Length: 35
Image: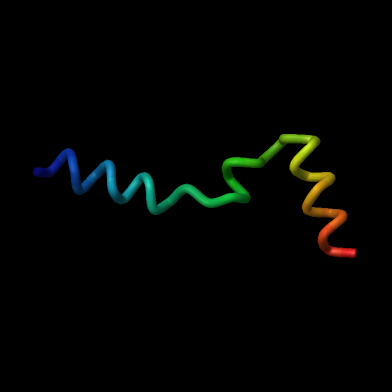
């Protein structure tokens, strides 16, 4: 049960920003959306 709780917390900590960090293609897409 504790493992499930820890896994859930880690999954909730993931964000689009963290997943796309240092990804040049995604950075360009987000920059284009801001314009």
